Amino acid sequence: MFSIPGQPPVTVTDAAAAQIARLMARQDAAGLRIGVKKGGCAGMEYTMDYVPEVEPHDEVVEVAGGARVIIAPMAQMFLFGTEIDYETSLLESGFRFRNPNVVDACGCGESIKFDEKLGTPS
Image 1: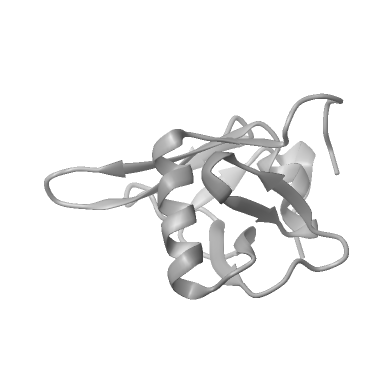
Image 2: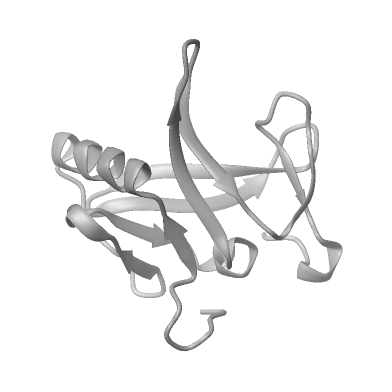
């Protein structure tokens, strides 16, 4: 994992941790696996799946309240330093990623572009 000793690779707000824990219990999941894949108008998209088990090369971030974020191996360098939040507004609610590695995003907010120095995940 691309990390700084003593610091988690991603941070999770209290609102996101509560939502992740709620959904983990409902899904009987080991955690929320976050990844990235090619797609969208800016070139990349986040992926999120509740999974039954942690895979050998996953990075696991234990969060307060029993929430667990699992980072897929190919996404680790793209997500380092990201804050994961959960926001609720009058019209929508969902997870929000504040990722310092993103250099551009599409207007709809579903697609992102990473700094070219990071490469492209396969």
